[in-house]
Length: 121
Image 1: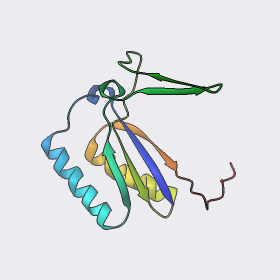
Image 2 (image 1 turned 180 degrees about the vertical axis):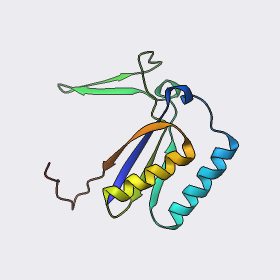
Image 3 (image 1 turned 180 degrees about the horizontal axis):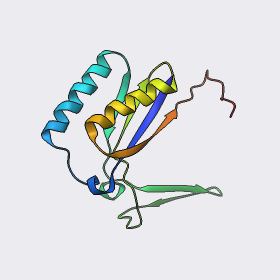
Image 4 (image 1 turned 30 degrees about the vertical axis):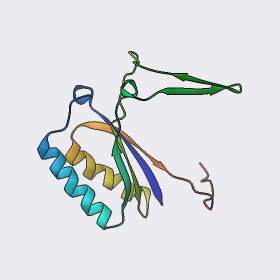
């Protein structure tokens, strides 16, 4: 099962660069999970106002809005794509990530492929 994990830092940490110590610990965790075949992709994300755009599709019309976005309440700081055996294992990967990254919150979403059956709710 593949999962996309999205992390958001605690408000007081948004926009604060990580320490060298945290980067070293995160590097060890990323290397371990990559070597174990769990981590498929990872990356940090800059705020939309720093080179991104907000896109909307509605009624056949596509709109692009550039930042800055003063109303943004949370910044998506990074993502990881993992392959594990269950949602519980994905939750454990997330727990290990936040043990290194510090306070924040996240989402874990199962990735559906062309051969997957849509789960019943």
